[in-house]
Length: 543
Image (cartoon, rainbow, N blue to C red; front, side, top):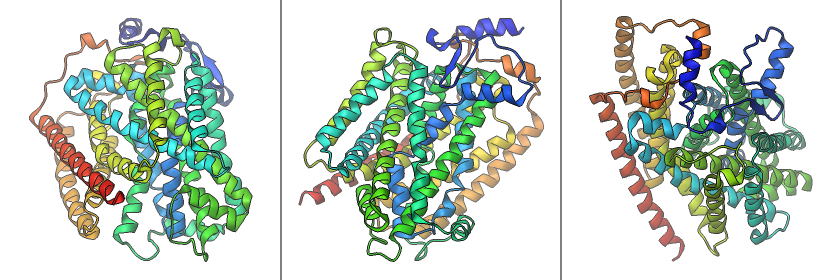
């Protein structure tokens, strides 16, 4: 039975380069390895071979925009927004764990899976938004590169092209292991936040108390609430879902190794949140009781401020952290885009392939990088406006990505025994609903800056509680009528999605169809409103 499943599932893989041994940065696992890991030493060596996709996607999320957001929180509000960061860990873990299962079990990328289960229209709806958002995000990464190296006096006309060329060279090396090792260099550089924080001499007691005490300096105003939303919004970006699922497939991780990849994802979430906390703490202690407190401008201004009040070494460290965050962010977001491009057009898309074997895949990567870098170099380009628009657009597009994710993780034809457990559906639904409310508030207050944020929170929050209560009652009743089947562990480890040609597309229910079209209308209206606002801001800048 297991052999038949294996034979069937080999044909579900769209690129034969996705079949074979796992060749990670720190180890190799044979494709046919079925040996038990009974000792802790054997389990640790296996984890070393598996580890990568989770850490890379999480650290990549602490990109140039993330560094600027955490620095802004520390500079304008001190330690009083630290409590938001521990809350991000379960959000990160729950969302990314779902794409880990989707990748390992289906053996295809997120974009391809949406196309096969929902049709090309909804796939292009999802991926088209992703392409637009990712390109804009990559532009902000190169803005980070120019600001970071500008601290050292390097012209953006030299720093940006060099960074772009380096990214392409690393990615197009033709070796998944070599690429992953490069990524781990950037992950290790992320730990520069530790000596940076040491220079600030933070008080452990004060830091801990703000971790567990919600509040904000000066009270909850529209400005402070928007910053809270921005901090939360940086944790679950649509590109992360596409990247980790495709990277799990590209690394050849199968259901047998899902638990190890879960550990990788949890470790990545803690590394990300700890680094974010240290950045916020460092900036808060550096600028307190100085004229810079409450007057954030940009990441370059933070680097200069740290150098002025904590010594030149701290400004240098912060600039290096910003540079590192920009590069790993650009590498991850661009690769997520190229993976989705390969899924949609059916081209070879694997880091195991050399340039001559996957020219379109690598050329799409290089083209995205070159276009984004070129936009940053346009004289007098509204870089600040671009950054603000990207953050708002990410908040607007987030709900559609999470809705598709939940629907896929409850598709028994795709995941079989790996579908979401009832408790996970409940937790994920609450998280997705809260993110939907936050993204809606972010969109509304971006387009209408004078909106009453407190009234929005109360109104949308109250409606959310009522809807979740009704949905929860209906869900529990449904579970009592049709309890989920129990599947032996051995069967779970060998079960993978059959070829798409053998799967019948699910009949669209009225509820699902209505949900998708309501989401489509909401996103269309929101993007149009955001575009109008961006044009208004652009015209105002040039007056």
